[in-house]
Length: 138
Image 1 (cartoon, one colour):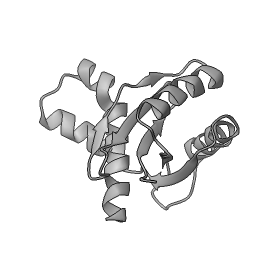
Image 2: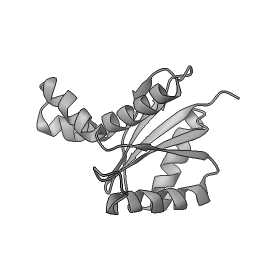
Image 3: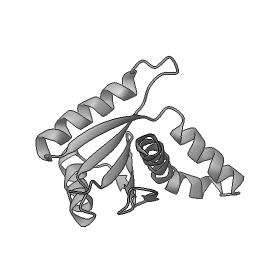
């Protein structure tokens, strides 16, 4: 079975999403999930997984610059453990240290206003997470 990837940029308030194209060459940004509760977050994720026939989640793992997992990384691990109890799917982690910064820089270079940047930053960070992951695989 062909693998299809969904990247998650898990934050306190939002989850940025990006899906691989059917050939797993590029990453396309999807809508951002505005977090409400684990139950509602997982229901929203299930819908996306089914819609795009995803069988691998690539979850951005926040790390400190020295590579250690900090407070945010622990929160992502907790989220992932709860998720795996609700959804039977393969999970891979990808270092996300610079993905949000890369996304912000891209938007600033494109003269995107601060207000609009807030709306798309998580989605673009998820695209960067998945792009790095796909590049490593090829």
